[in-house]
Image (tube, rainbow, N blue to C red):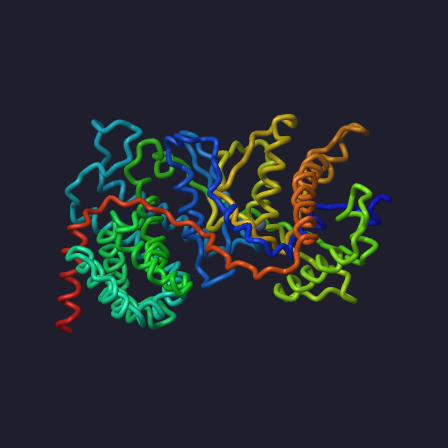
Length: 495
Ligand SMILES: [Zn+2]
């Protein structure tokens, strides 16, 4: 019996949404097709998307780039419409980078693909220029930084001394931990207000100093490494929130993004950013509609497509989990069976549709994002990439996927209606083919999930791994960082 309603990717995602099993181990930054990425554009686009964030939570931005020798255009999308402040923020950043470039004077003896600092001895005007840029970005993203800090730091500070004592660190690590304790408390003081403090420079320099102190240890995973030892101690109690490494990584995120963006000032390859025409285009948000009925008779043919025996208990369990998921997302199913609502298309999917509808633009094939993609978006991209070539489109990529499913996800129309209408009858449209691939991928997952439910009988669910990723790039001298932080600490203590 054919399914009684149109099978859509949204239907499959909804049915999968109650999957308890821990799929976050699949969360990865995906392998991208440009392993060399000579311009390191992916990092740059991720950084540009990340610094668009202004609010404490709920904001997502994706950024694509079209660049030739004479002009650069950034296309920015969000889950809602892109605020005008974000567009002006990116213009301001570009303006400050232009000023910075004037004082760094790229050295012609350095090859074009070398993006390291042109002059190891910073001049005062360069330091000032970099600080101005940092201030602009910290000020714009202050609320987000503050939220990141307070999510973990107070709990970590509360156990800091006892944890350090148990660790019995060697002299060098003990010094690091001691400086960090001081710095975290100092930052906590600076972040008290919900408006940026007057002493933004103090905040920036303290974070810079800490980043330098931890430079070589942040990603070190050996069992003797101090942050690993800290985590092992904490994880014994299964309190992941108390990971010092995680807090530091979160705290240094903005610092790393700023360093990545600052590279534009001395990169010769990226010179069109500062020398050509610069535009920022706000990509309009797309809307979607979802209307799905989850009565047993609607769902049974979908979850048992091959005419298997229809097990009502499995179906009931699946629908029970779906309803729980809906409740968690604050969605009410009408009569317990009908999901009906307006949705917005997620930022990266909006950007994909935009570029497929504007073929005169030739964007870089990687979209930078302020976060990893959800399961719906990731499946859309991988499905599109499977058929892209046959429609003479390039593939497009984002940095990876956290595998969560959102019931409010909706699939965008990749082609405008009039373009679909022009197709010969019987010719498959891009939208149809992509959706087919999505359904093929999702139905494989659904059948595995149904098998799981069959076997279930509820084991305790495992805790979710944290899925976000952190960057790790830094060229500061750790020693210099310790020295600076000490100076700051001593100055702070005299106050
Ligand atoms: Zn998404």
